[in-house]
Length: 239
Image 1 (cartoon, helix red, strand yellow):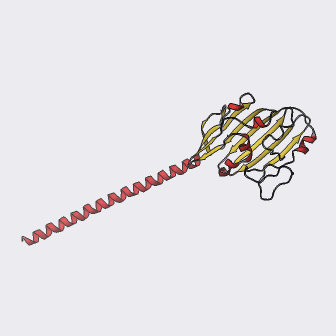
Image 2: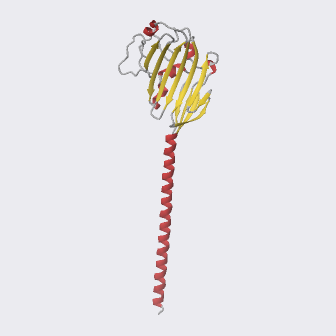
Image 3: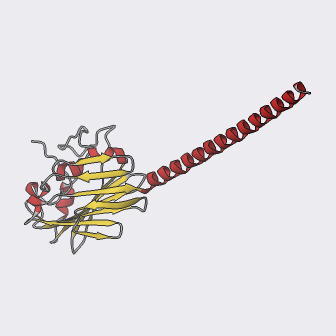
């Protein structure tokens, strides 16, 4: 039977594991960066076991029986490290902002991911529960970090902690069933565009007002000239 490997791929063999999920959001892309850490020493066989590629998009063709990538399919970058103290794995991929809703790892790790892209607002929500805990019984703690560049302002959120431009959620096995992630960002670049448009409109309005004033002044001048000509003609008649 085919096995789908995602996010905390090491957990099924480790005696205990902590994981950190990071999203780095910039105006250019959204990068997923996942780090898994063992709490105990592991064997080199674990590295040999984890050789299967992870498709970046949830609707991509995926063959988990063979450690072979399919031509034309985008995959996560995976790196592993084993030393005398701990075993770790890093998984990452940079998505275009409009493609993140289809990211494989986040969709397989939470319930009902939704992303809303309005003109100057970006809203992210998940349903209740972090389902990765159900799949991997040895996952003890999960830290979720959302790092936001200066192109955005953090708005509404339910994070456990906000540290400058970073939102942090700390989820463990005792509360994961009730966990919900939601946050919204304001795109400051779009705000600048809106302000520029307002200034342009104000300039257009000012130009229109100036045009109206010019037409009124010209009309009064023409009326004065006509009245003057009429008076001169009347004087000539009565001479």
